[in-house]
Amino acid sequence: VKARLREFKRRVENGESFSILKTSQYSYANPIPSCGQTRDGLVYRIQLCALSKPAANDLFGGITPVCYELAAQTNVRKYYAGIFRTLQTVNDALSKVRAHGFPDAFIVAFYNGKLIPTEKAREIEFSGQ
Image 1 (cartoon, rainbow, N blue to C red):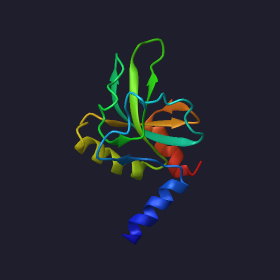
Image 2: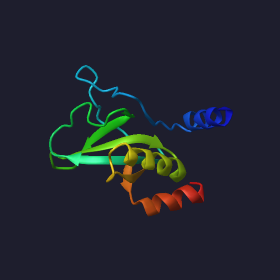
Image 3: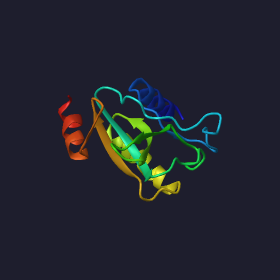
Image 4: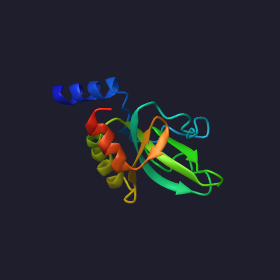
């Protein structure tokens, strides 16, 4: 229990956020938000899906946080889960997301707000930038 608490504190201090609750925290009164500006530096997220119409607020069950962004010049909304600073933590979460009913989910990476290839993200992470 103490080790799990230490790990949770480390993730919060790093600005990471992810959990799977028993029920969705999103509803008509609290809809899934737009992602807005991605944090500076390296950020990993899990892409859950891409849809041409808005997702039902409870589609992702208790996965949180979830946000979406509109793909450039389209109606397609890309839905992302979590905020992660390391490849290890996003990989751990990815296995939980897949087991929670999203087998096609995958990792995406952003650097200073711009989508980058995960290979480049790995280089940045391990170079300490």
